Image 1 (cartoon, rainbow, N blue to C red):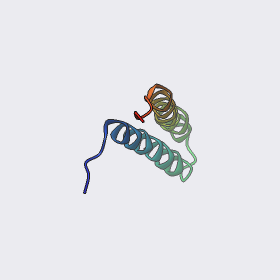
Image 2: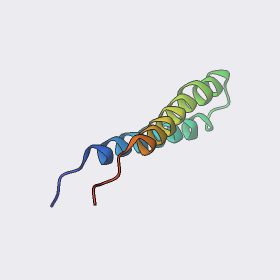
Image 3: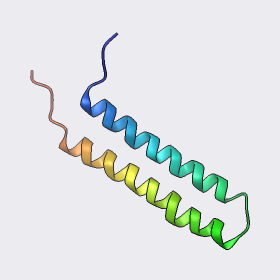
Image 4: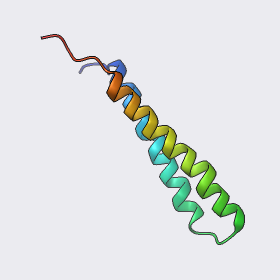
Length: 67
């Protein structure tokens, strides 16, 4: 069994952020309340944007393997 490389760990973190953002947005859809909308937009949206941004940054900055 091999250990995870640096990019795999970073991509896993971005995936976790995206999943957390989707969970927050899903839970906020259950309640009809102004704070639920704020949670949907501010917390869920921020987690999604952070996860997507981290994903794109590390994909673009990853060096190709030698060979």
